[in-house]
Amino acid sequence: MTIIATNRRAGFDYALGEHYEAGLVLTGSEVKSVKTGHASLKGSFVTVKGDELYLTNALIPRYAHAHKDTKHDDTRPKKLLLRKREIRSLIGKYRTEGLTLVPIKLYTRKQLVKLEFSIGKGKKKYDKRADMGKRDAKRRIDRAMRS
Image (cartoon, rainbow, N blue to C red; front, side, top):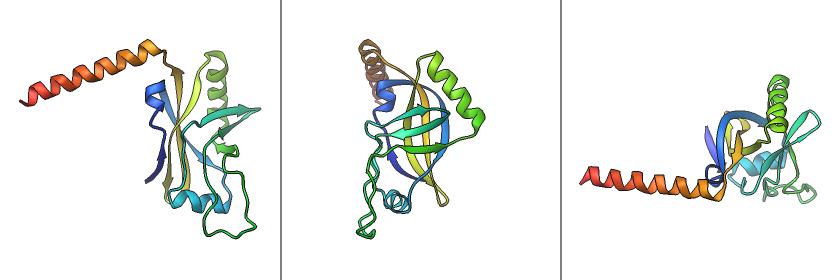
């Protein structure tokens, strides 16, 4: 498993819950671009359209060595491949509980490109400050224990 892109702000901005793994529908030049490490999940999110899930606003630039006529929109929505049962349960949680589907990392498993995403609830400013305080306190305790 080779990790290509991670969304580092996901854990800071959201309280993450269950994790899911989904395949992506990509064109040939997008796959080559992803496998060479050119992808970004910064500012991306998972949206629901009908009974399908899409990765929106993820940047996958054009493959550098692709044919000149090969054109695609870098941030086009990419369809996620999940089982119907999983999609139904995610849509139910998404709509009733007001949760967000947050992409966490993009990676390859064998020759396939996969996306790991999670159900998240947005953190308020005071939640973020409390988490930072806990992290700092843990760091101080660890330092004291070492010396």
